[in-house]
Length: 246
Length: 193
Image 1: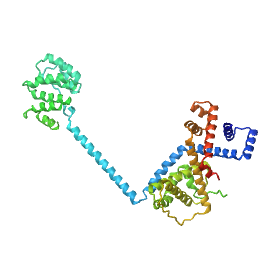
Image 2: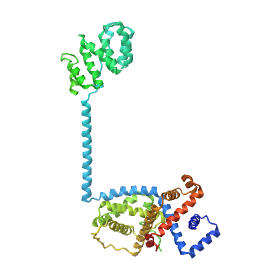
Image 3: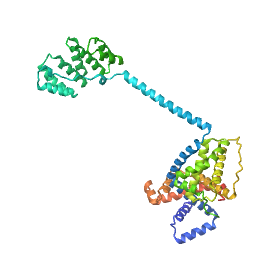
Image 4: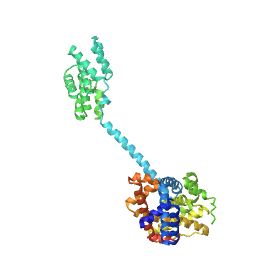
């Protein structure tokens, strides 16, 4: 019975009753105060909720405007209390900026404390032509190496090595290609044998042995190798520089 | 009853249109007095900002739903609304040692009538809202969908039920809400309207 009453309210408000049903309903409302009260509440709820939910979005937008204007006109309307608040917040922000700059600098210094291989890996270009043996493998090896195409360079240098088995420079450059290709142990073997010898490339090989360790981030071992480079060597300045940063 | 809008009705229209230019004039002209009042009565600038904002949102809803027409100067009407709202807030907070500083500004009867209209509108809305929250989750969801989507066919589809069921459920939920409102103490106090 109760249920039917509300269905009737709903239909009446939706204009879904026939003329006779409508007249009958209105007559009942006028004779039954209790029913009338309930209907009035039902109707008021309907308009109120409809308006509330329909306008939810625009209310939010209005609130945004009001919040903005409120802080502009009210909190700026200087009371000493709010003023100091604003200032201290400003200082706080400044402090934050300073702190983050300090942090950034610290980070950079810290980064500087860990030198990376690429900072020191400026290889001299490969120039084997001076040997006069102007063959195809030499041109290809030079071209590849000088354009940082280390894989191809390594292949060409291996071909050359067969023709010139005692050429230490070719071996050294093979080693450099190996570092670039992250073949650390093979590279190390080459640099070890050259640095133990007495060729003109002795200390260059030692330097590259150190770089090989640097690229693997083996800083302690790298340091030890660098220390074996004497002052007289061409590589000494570079080694000193790198040692400072380790 | 004279329903001729006062010139200050522009502020009501600005609320409806979210017109920030006119609303910023409103803040510039009227907020200072309210901030001073709140500060002199145990409040701070933030309290005043909240009071002003909530009052304006209420007026906005009243204008939207009831086509509220301002027939008196906005200044007096708004000031009295904010003042009373702040006193209510203090009561809620249980601030005992309130020393209400009354000011000379007397208000004419016709102004008072508009203020009361707005206050009753708000009280009724608050009552409806709190009773709505007492409904079960299913009813709340259905009614929300009903009023947002409007077409009951779409509501039924949205909720995955038949149209007939959605209609029946809607009037059931509304009926329950009607009962909750009718039986509440607050309603007995509002009854005269």
